[in-house]
Amino acid sequence: MNEEYAEKHRRLAVDDKFKFSCHKGLSCFNTCCSDVNIFLTPYDVLRIRESLEVSSGEFLKRYTVALLGDEGIPLVVLKMLEDRNKNCPFVTPDGCGIYRDRPWSCRMYPIFPASPKEDGFSIEERSSCLALKEGKQWTIEEWKKDQGIDIYDMMNESYRQITFHDYFQKGNKLDQGKAKLIYRACYDLDDFRTFLFKTKFFDIYDVEEEVVQKIREDEEDLEEILNFGYRWVRFSLFSEGVLKLKDAEMDKLLRVKR
Figure 1 (cartoon, one colour):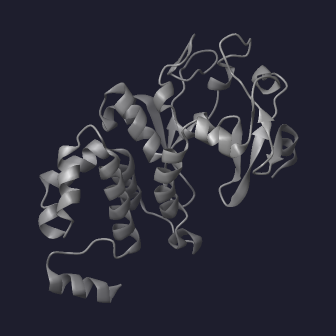
Figure 2 (figure 1 turned 45 degrees about the vertical axis):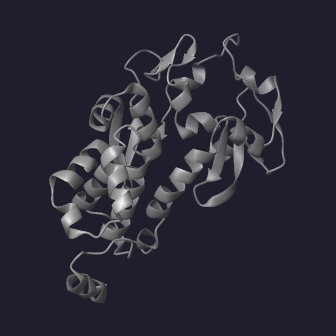
């Protein structure tokens, strides 16, 4: 943790309390929603896409920028408006226009994980943030419960198991084709669904019938297909035994090669 960061952030233990109450009456209302990098998880994209009632592809093209991390893992960042303040495209004078489906990082604010590889949290202590000086006191767990974080943490943990896989800890990096595989299976879920049903995927792979039916029927609820996308990535990139071929002999051969 560098000195500049430490000066603006305070580490919090699980039982430590902090104050925070943001509302329209504050002079700083909405200022935290501008000129900021908001990295979106696959579940963030799923929720916002459903809120806006647009396809995954349309949302990604219109509202995000795709980058590549050091390991070749795709990163999806919310695209700020090209105005003076670089505002979030969903902020309104009355607050967040997608509040019910706002991203994980927006729900957690002003709390941040200490680091991706460390336990614990820190809180941003900006003197200009009046919301930190008034209102109810919270513990970390109280805040997470109030902000509806549990489902986000559960869905994001599956993605974290991919991005922090031993494969990357050993120094491996993804080529462009494998990066596109993750992007399609985890972020562009409508395109991934088309791939599954417009090819002979389910003729080749032995997928549980109830899973196939949920993916086929739940067009408005993409959680099932996202969970399957995670399985496909783990199978394709890391050769994990989370899928098997319908051809038993070919499957046996494939497992021997692993």
